[in-house]
Amino acid sequence: MESVRTLIIGAGMSGLATAAFLRDSDYLVLERDAEIGGYCKTVKQDGFVWDYSGHFFHFKQPEIASYLHARMPAQRLLEVNKRSFIHYGEQWIDFPFQKNIHQLPKDELIECLVDLYFARAPGVRSEPLPETNFEEMLYARFGRAIAEKFLIPYNEKLYAVKLSALDKDAMGRFFPHADLTDIVRNMRTADNASYNATFSYPEGGAIEYVKAIASEVKSSQIALGESLVSIDLAQKVATTSKRAIRFERLVSSAPFNRLLQAAGKLEDPAVWSWNKVLVFNLGFDKKGPKDVHWVYYPDRSLAFYRVGFYDNIFDTDRMSLYVEIGYPAEGEVDVAAMRARTLEDLQRVGVVKDHQLVSHHSVVLDPAYVHITARSMREHARLKAELEARGVYTLGRYGGWTYCSIEDNVIEARALTERMG
Ligand SMILES: Cc1cc2nc3c(=O)[nH]c(=O)nc-3n(C[C@H](O)[C@H](O)[C@H](O)COP(=O)(O)OP(=O)(O)OC[C@H]3O[C@@H](n4cnc5c(N)ncnc54)[C@H](O)[C@@H]3O)c2cc1C
Image (cartoon, rainbow, N blue to C red):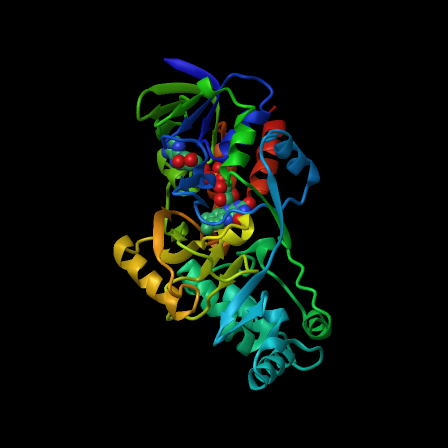
């Protein structure tokens, strides 16, 4: 039987970064797909450059950005100051909603401000409102009007679940928190700084970051079109779609519930729930709205929750959109019917006018956003420790059952290789 010291499952950012940072070269990367990249793939079609949904990069650690950028010398890197809006009623207001309620009509501003004040101003309530889940957290910190006008409908469209099912920290650092002082101060001096206020984007699309990290991985040690099927934890043998491989340690970036299933440890499948996202990439014959990178759509009668404009990132003259639509994991996706509805809805909101669609592509990300619940966090920590004791490690956005960026994936892979030795 073949054997390898480190068997890595998945050639997305997490799996490739693990291989790149390992101290020895006794590894094999197994990738189910025919290509590397996972969710950071890029599609080039009819002169348009599209990702699997908009993938933009904002680095917290400059050395991670430098590490990647040093490995993509031929790439022109676009540095962009984000312009994002919320389509609300007939107008666009600045994102985040909670810090820009002063841009709403006066009666709605008053409603938001009064509810915000009575939800959280010091000394107003005898005891604080409960925050035992994501929905309660939104009511407690922002008041009813802000929660119900934007935060709840938008996030329910995205997650395709009642927000009371999610943990209050389900979005971690990606949730734009703001307190009463921040909100009132923002009315006079705008400070909409966020974790991604500026972002970088390679001219060749997100795949260029994958190629940068893959330049440190031996391509002969990536097996494409080969899936992990099962793991014998006692014998330390992985069965793939093609062979059996003995390993000393296995590092998986596959979704955690699927790793558990492969290892015979999926005790209660109901712990693990997630949404899927249908992404349409749409190319048109001429320019659309300018000075905007993406728009959030909380209106429940519209199919999509977000639309992004690649042409305003590349500064090109034909409108190039990504459109994101959330579904429950078990939801049926009728791509052709949803494309027709999406085009109608894009007309309704004024993005498409007399444009002709000249190119299109779609992909379903399944899973896209995992549902982080108190139980999923507890079970993930317990089962992760049990697997690690048997030499099986899990990482990445889906292996970690978390909400994160590709920079987080690289940081985590580097830390894991240091810990494993
Ligand atoms: C809608 C959306 C928008 C996003 N936007 C951004 C953004 O703007 N900026 C940003 O930094 N991040 C963004 N992200 C996050 C980013 O996509 C992820 O952090 C990153 O792609 C995760 O990489 P990964 O390697 O952990 O997982 P994946 O990319 O999912 O890679 C896992 C790989 O494992 C393979 N695999 C799975 N099971 C098996 C098996 N049994 N056998 C063999 N191979 C297997 C898969 O085929 C896949 O290639 C976004 C994510 C989503 C869903």
